[in-house]
Image (tube, rainbow, N blue to C red; front, side):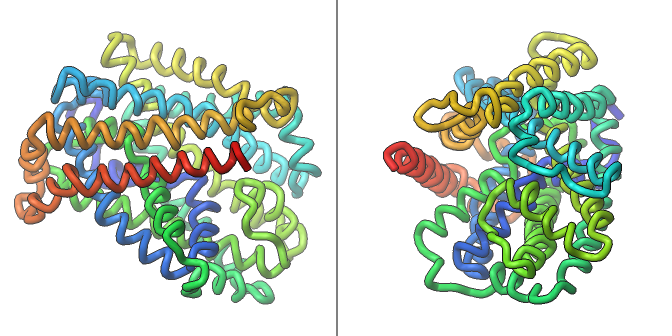
Amino acid sequence: MKQNQWASRLGFVLATAGAAIGLGNLWKFPYLMGSNGGFFFLIAYLVFIVILGLPVMMLEMSLGRYTGKNPVASYRQIHPKAGIVGVFGVLSAMMILSYYSVIGGWIIKYVISYVTTFQAPADFAAFTSNGPETTLWHFVFMAITVLICLKGVSGIEKASKFMMPTLFILLLVVIVRNVTLPNAGEGLKFIFTPSESSFSLSSISTALGQVFYSLSLCMGITITYGSYLKKGENIPRSCGHVAIMDTTIAVLAGIAIFPAVFSFGLEPGQGPSLIFGTLPKVFSEIAGGSIFAILFFALVLFAAVTSAIALLEVVVSFVVGSMGWSRKKAVLLVGGLIFLLGIPSCLSFGPLADVTLAGYTFFDLVGLLTDNFLLPIGGILMCWFVGWKWNPNILVDEIKDGCPGFKLQKVWVLCIRFLTPILVLIVTISGFINIYQTIVG
């Protein structure tokens, strides 16, 4: 077995699922589901998983295994000009991790605060505005991510094998506690009740975009992890398992969080502040709340770390493959660079809070550039180069190595050539509309 290869299919699936399961699964998906038609939104999301998420995941995974290279080199192998797609993915991974690590630092602060004082920091806004302290925790989170990546594929696999099952168990424990709270059923109704009045064309676009980001498509992650995959592994089955785990965790997160929110009459649509500002109030009011708070923030930390190591691995894979650096040198220097890139995001809630561009702080601007420009444009170019400038049937043969009964090859090729780029274009246009409305509104 090569050093840069997964030791087992389970380790590969858990690592890939861990890359997809992140902070957005724990608060964003359940809230979007509740505010966009409940069960209707879930059905739309599952449909888009099948017609967008799985085809793109299979493309990236099979391309990674076919070439055995990093994202930039993989695309260059299929077309001289296609390297730009990989560049977009690597840049996205760097930029996303730079601000993702800031939030990861907040989570560590909360875990330590609950372990040492049995309560959350007194004021979330005051904490995030403290630039030196948030920078310190940002450093700690990046250091953890770097230490895991230093061990290479084996380190990522071992961490994922521990963190993903533990995350699932902790989530179930929190669910059992929160669904027994008074009026917890109101939170479940918010998520699951079919609501035609709140389900619209905008809801469909939202479900489409959530699939794109929830599965970490076009970030180079699936190509990178796919390049470490053995020949003969069943790619469609592996992608299906990742999608099922990702969706299951997202729905379970809603069952864990929103019954508590509604039980205490709190506002569900708060984004990240729901986790850091609102839920601590819930934990402070329930019996054994500090223990459940530790468990909850531990599971959030595991979700953040498994995603962070995947993002870092994308950039490290590119640097090692293109510059010939040792893994140790690449991980340390890339990790250090991303830490520095994240400092302005740390300060966006304090010293740099008033420094904005078109109304966006540095923290928000980095997310804007990746979510609305680099990722969707990279997705469209990916479909163009693979579907039209190359021969996608080469990847069909790669998929059949491990899945000889792959009978949907014609449907898959049609998705890559026509349906997927149209859906990604819708995500892109929707993103631009939201930016315009934010600026003029």
